[in-house]
Length: 101
Length: 383
Image 1 (cartoon, helix red, strand yellow):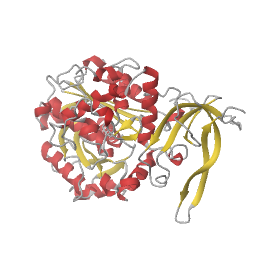
Image 2 (cartoon, helix red, strand yellow; image 1 turned 90 degrees about the vertical axis):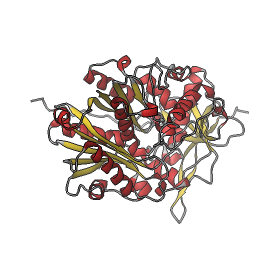
Image 3 (cartoon, one colour; image 1 turned 180 degrees about the horizontal axis):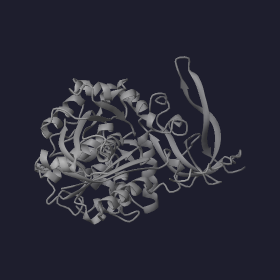
Image 4 (cartoon, chains in turn orange, yellow; image 1 turned 180 degrees about the vertical axis):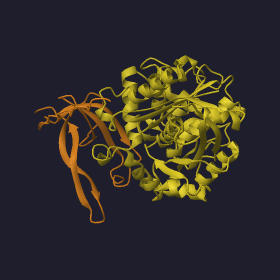
């Protein structure tokens, strides 16, 4: 018989990301799912955060074309609405980091 | 564990079956497989289905299909692993027969995509993504494939036309398959001009979701030899998983689960990739075809797309793929796709593939992916 496996202690600690990163990849959706059809076409991206991890999020406040490597920062935006009463779901999107004036 | 063989196969044409219900499609494929095996009953039924709840508002398919297929009372339940549900059902049937717990198992894949249409279907299909971290942000499976494809093109310096060969090959083979959804050929040069769904993934790049049902019947290899003239042995069977969310993978441009499940299957069958006569790969998007070839050991990293350039993947090439049209042209009846792959591989190994026959087909590799490779189910069939 095998020895019972030892329980691995998972240490979790709260970590706050700076909210900045760069575009790892992006696409413009022409065919959106229900709940997002009014927003189409919209730009979805993989954003590589400066601390390392990657997230999937929409890009917003875009004035021109996007490119891989573009610097972006997190902002809070409306993602969609749910149900017949239109409850708003807020979440994170990313926008280009504007050069400081 | 005992050796397992396939003694019966059945399929219905893939397409839009507006006049048939999920249960009718399933029963038709099950009956076809039973006729092919010369059997009236089996000991168990395993149903691969991905979106019964989301598309058809129907779950509990084991009992439903058993009843409609004339197998009332038999052990039956469904198996779900998104687009890899069919492959996972085959794995379940394999384990049941190999263990000796079940003597004869019917593995059936079924999907009724047309029970839902338009934006509602796009949303329904999203239940297989990471709900909080992908779908909530407006992602779709096609959009995630596009993110993968753009990065692949960026890393390896490729234009869209580099992927055209996969779709041309799939359609050339689909055109000869009476069960394929698309039987038209694609003209060289047309691919890069097709309408975008989520750039760079366009209409000619992405497989159509469809209705379909397919079935195979498994029994022990020992028993199979007495029952049918041409049993097909399952010599490798393996499943591996990767992170559900694409963004959580340390290396996005490598299908780790596809690699691990393929090499586990090779080890079980004691073969090398170059022993494989044909590869039914999961070409839901051309970038998945390229990455699958890399993961299964047929190309170096970043080189998978090159195999589509020079006819290597054609029926008479060095590694025929998508021999009946693949997901792209045969169509993608999502939870049934893995079982269609199994039926097609059996036709090749039995020498019954007619206009789609691969010469001297001895060893077939089939790989069914769930999502963008979060689940990978690999089987090896031999005669």
